[in-house]
Image (cartoon, rainbow, N blue to C red; front, side, top):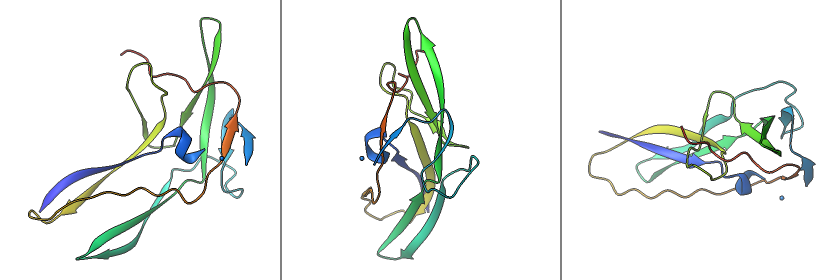
Length: 129
Protein backbone atom coordinates (compact mmCIF):
# COMPACT_ATOMS: atom_id res chain seq x y z
CA UNK A 1 0.00 0.00 0.00
CA UNK A 2 1.34 3.45 -0.92
CA UNK A 3 0.13 6.73 0.54
CA UNK A 4 0.09 9.64 -1.87
CA UNK A 5 -1.15 13.17 -1.35
CA UNK A 6 -4.20 13.98 -3.42
CA UNK A 7 -4.48 17.74 -3.60
CA UNK A 8 -7.56 19.56 -4.78
CA UNK A 9 -6.47 23.13 -5.32
CA UNK A 10 -9.44 25.31 -4.66
CA UNK A 11 -8.25 27.82 -7.23
CA UNK A 12 -10.13 31.06 -6.78
CA UNK A 13 -11.43 30.92 -10.33
CA UNK A 14 -12.71 27.39 -9.71
CA UNK A 15 -14.79 28.12 -6.64
CA UNK A 16 -15.68 31.52 -7.73
CA UNK A 17 -19.22 32.63 -11.48
CA UNK A 18 -23.82 34.67 -9.15
CA UNK A 19 -21.89 37.79 -8.16
CA UNK A 20 -21.20 38.48 -4.49
CA UNK A 21 -18.79 40.77 -2.68
CA UNK A 22 -15.74 39.02 -1.27
CA UNK A 23 -16.54 38.24 2.36
CA UNK A 24 -15.09 40.06 5.35
CA UNK A 25 -15.35 37.38 8.00
CA UNK A 26 -17.44 34.29 7.24
CA UNK A 27 -19.19 34.17 3.85
CA UNK A 28 -21.67 31.30 3.48
CA UNK A 29 -21.56 29.63 0.05
CA UNK A 30 -24.41 27.20 0.71
CA UNK A 31 -26.79 29.78 2.19
CA UNK A 32 -27.24 27.56 5.26
CA UNK A 33 -24.04 27.74 7.29
CA UNK A 34 -24.01 30.82 9.52
CA UNK A 35 -20.64 30.26 11.24
CA UNK A 36 -17.21 29.04 10.03
CA UNK A 37 -17.11 25.34 9.18
CA UNK A 38 -14.37 23.37 7.38
CA UNK A 39 -15.11 21.79 3.99
CA UNK A 40 -16.67 18.33 4.04
CA UNK A 41 -15.03 15.50 2.11
CA UNK A 42 -17.40 12.61 1.42
CA UNK A 43 -16.55 9.36 -0.33
CA UNK A 44 -19.19 8.92 -3.02
CA UNK A 45 -17.76 5.74 -4.52
CA UNK A 46 -14.88 3.45 -3.61
CA UNK A 47 -14.09 0.32 -5.61
CA UNK A 48 -11.24 -1.47 -7.39
CA UNK A 49 -12.01 0.79 -10.36
CA UNK A 50 -11.69 4.09 -8.59
CA UNK A 51 -12.46 6.52 -5.83
CA UNK A 52 -14.88 9.44 -6.09
CA UNK A 53 -14.73 12.11 -3.39
CA UNK A 54 -17.14 15.04 -3.19
CA UNK A 55 -15.89 18.23 -1.55
CA UNK A 56 -18.58 20.53 -0.14
CA UNK A 57 -17.56 24.09 0.72
CA UNK A 58 -20.07 25.54 3.18
CA UNK A 59 -18.34 28.93 3.06
CA UNK A 60 -15.11 30.86 3.07
CA UNK A 61 -13.41 33.22 5.52
CA UNK A 62 -12.19 36.57 4.23
CA UNK A 63 -10.11 39.27 5.85
CA UNK A 64 -8.70 42.58 4.63
CA UNK A 65 -4.95 43.00 4.29
CA UNK A 66 -3.44 46.38 3.40
CA UNK A 67 0.01 46.28 1.86
CA UNK A 68 1.44 49.70 1.02
CA UNK A 69 -1.55 51.57 -0.39
CA UNK A 70 -3.26 48.49 -1.84
CA UNK A 71 -6.14 46.69 -0.15
CA UNK A 72 -6.34 42.91 -0.64
CA UNK A 73 -8.67 40.15 0.53
CA UNK A 74 -7.10 37.12 2.20
CA UNK A 75 -9.17 33.93 1.88
CA UNK A 76 -9.11 30.79 3.99
CA UNK A 77 -10.98 27.56 4.60
CA UNK A 78 -11.16 26.59 8.29
CA UNK A 79 -8.64 23.84 9.15
CA UNK A 80 -6.84 24.02 5.77
CA UNK A 81 -3.79 25.71 4.24
CA UNK A 82 -3.24 28.24 1.44
CA UNK A 83 -0.99 28.22 -1.63
CA UNK A 84 2.49 29.60 -1.07
CA UNK A 85 3.87 30.42 -4.52
CA UNK A 86 5.30 33.90 -3.90
CA UNK A 87 3.47 36.67 -5.75
CA UNK A 88 0.62 34.45 -6.97
CA UNK A 89 -2.85 34.64 -5.40
CA UNK A 90 -2.83 33.00 -1.97
CA UNK A 91 -5.86 30.72 -2.28
CA UNK A 92 -7.15 27.92 -0.03
CA UNK A 93 -6.01 24.35 -0.73
CA UNK A 94 -7.53 21.06 0.36
CA UNK A 95 -5.06 18.17 0.71
CA UNK A 96 -6.02 14.61 1.58
CA UNK A 97 -3.89 11.46 1.81
CA UNK A 98 -5.28 8.48 -0.10
CA UNK A 99 -4.03 4.89 0.23
CA UNK A 100 -3.46 3.13 -3.10
CA UNK A 101 -2.26 -0.35 -4.06
CA UNK A 102 1.45 -0.30 -4.89
CA UNK A 103 1.09 -1.25 -8.57
CA UNK A 104 -1.87 0.87 -9.67
CA UNK A 105 -2.09 3.63 -12.28
CA UNK A 106 -3.24 7.00 -10.97
CA UNK A 107 -5.12 9.82 -12.64
CA UNK A 108 -6.91 12.70 -10.92
CA UNK A 109 -9.84 14.65 -12.29
CA UNK A 110 -11.29 17.69 -10.52
CA UNK A 111 -14.77 18.79 -11.60
CA UNK A 112 -16.48 21.95 -10.32
CA UNK A 113 -20.24 21.48 -10.04
CA UNK A 114 -21.13 24.92 -8.65
CA UNK A 115 -19.45 28.28 -8.83
CA UNK A 116 -19.77 31.79 -7.42
CA UNK A 117 -18.19 34.98 -8.76
CA UNK A 118 -16.92 37.48 -6.21
CA UNK A 119 -16.22 41.16 -6.68
CA UNK A 120 -14.12 43.36 -4.47
CA UNK A 121 -10.42 43.80 -3.75
CA UNK A 122 -7.92 41.44 -5.37
CA UNK A 123 -6.86 38.27 -3.58
CA UNK A 124 -3.77 38.71 -1.44
CA UNK A 125 -0.58 37.43 -3.10
CA UNK A 126 1.40 34.80 -1.22
CA UNK A 127 4.20 36.55 0.67
CA UNK A 128 7.87 35.62 0.70
CA UNK A 129 8.49 33.64 3.87
